[in-house]
Amino acid sequence: MNITSCFTKDLFQGKTVFITGGSSGINLGIARNFAAVGANLGIVGRAQEKLDAAAAELRALGARVSTHSVDVRDYPALEKAIQNCRDELGPMHTLICGAAGNFPLAAEQISPNGFKSVIDIDLMGSFHACLAGFEQLKETQGNIIFISAGQAFMPYAFQAHVGAAKAGIDQMMRNLALEWGRFGIRCNSIAPGPIEGTEGVRRLVPAGSADQLKKMIPLGRFGTPDDIGQLSVFLASPLAAYITGTLVVADGGQNLPGSGAWTQLIMAEMAKAGKP
Ligand code: COA
Image 1 (cartoon, helix red, strand yellow):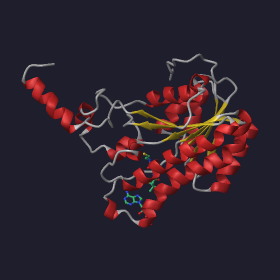
Image 2: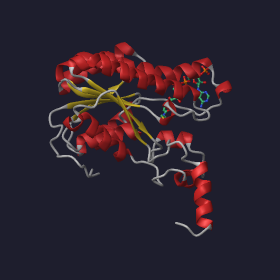
Image 3: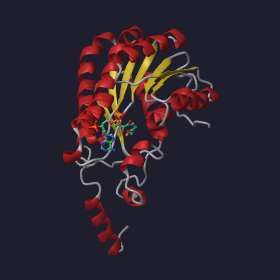
Image 4: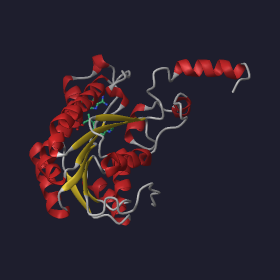
């Protein structure tokens, strides 16, 4: 697959980007976009066969790739993977904390262990990666991008566990930006809206409702993994050298207050009156 990148092909030449959850979905889209600008890629996932398929795809784009079959909840294993990746590809310049878990469920039905699983994967897993990657990021004066979500700042039904985890990630991001600026490390979050073809959309968008939901998004479509990939390359690049501690919302306007049912009703009214 060819990536049409807005960036020069050697922007990340020789630099290592380490991505948790990098074998599928949004995170694989991010990996593809870094491959297109010359980065080496370390990717972490739980299933080796998904990692192998992702690595083959990224190598076809010209990237050097190192795969690590690790659960981000297991700190010693993740720490070892981050060290092994350095041995293979050199110190990380960018860390993408993308590993996440989600299942939609009414708050009163989530078991304590189900809630904890999501907190452990999303929030603890992100902290684990930051802690284990810190020395390398200090060495490269690198940066961290956390994959957040609209649930972090907007309540969504059946997402109490995810909202708590993502809000925690964003506040941790701000704390790390504050503390690690002195080492030249930048920290930012991206909150993607619904992204086509991902496990998140499969789990969260009720069957048959995609078209209706798209109409409620001001830009009229779901996002693509490349939308988030290009934004990640920008945030990790010198173009964003003075940006730290920021949450960038890339959701087509989905989470704007007033987006959704209210706007739909007004638009329908305008259409009835023959106004565009
Ligand atoms: N509904 C209700 N509870 C669920 C559930 C569901 N669909 N899926 C898992 N759980 C609960 C389990 O019942 C268990 O709790 P219990 O011990 O009280 O029964 C707890 O969550 C852990 O389940 P387990 O299967 O051991 O989870 P895991 O730790 O291997 O996996 C999850 C983590 C739960 C997040 C799982 O959904 C997952 O692996 N997701 C990865 C992919 C993903 O979510 N992608 C979307 C990203 S947006």
